[in-house]
Image (cartoon, rainbow, N blue to C red; front, top):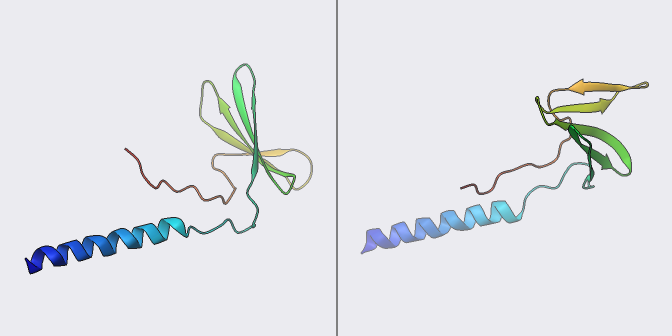
Length: 96
């Protein structure tokens, strides 16, 4: 009987620790959530990420081919990247 109580106590303790980690997730470092505008064209979908009204990056999802990101260059134009430069929390909490 003592062993089952110990297992029950450990299970409860573990579930509470997971709950506290999930409910107290860290906010983005900028303090602002990005605004996302989705535009669809004939062969591509664009996701424009803005923080404080400033365009930070564009995610391009073509119908055929890999996803890529356009990031503003220091001068004029855009730089094509393979991965996102945005630091937005993207955790998977549950998946089935």
